[in-house]
Length: 154
Image 1 (spheres, rainbow, N blue to C red):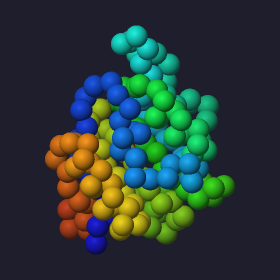
Image 2 (image 1 turned 135 degrees about the horizontal axis):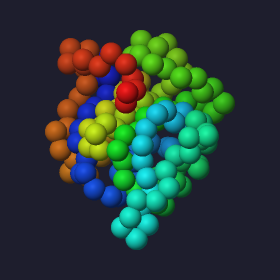
Image 3 (image 1 turned 90 degrees about the horizontal axis):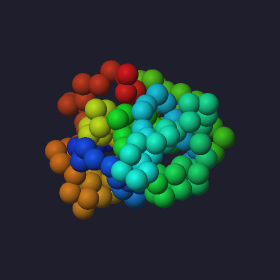
């Protein structure tokens, strides 16, 4: 069974989360923002954090605007998509499968992206999008090759 996909993005400023999530209706979900470190970029300089530490849940429309309208630099990111008003926090793949969480997006060390998704058609769309975006080292995450024990960046 395909659990998701993994790939590498360029280690530079951009709108990478918006590009990665292009096949997803971002606004249809509420998003749990976990620990991570991403900064907006203004005049080629790192500025304020992309995600506020005070808010750990963002409505999809706000997230969509934030990741598509701003240029930013991702060091790490941890996002989880839930149906509206049903946000909890999942920590393991087993919890993810038993929850209403639909997608988990993790970015580690600026370039390593892992996406877990319950919908097989969405996994395929994310894979095609990664190919179109010319991301590197694209592969499906399966029951056989998934070594991750926790769904977090730390």
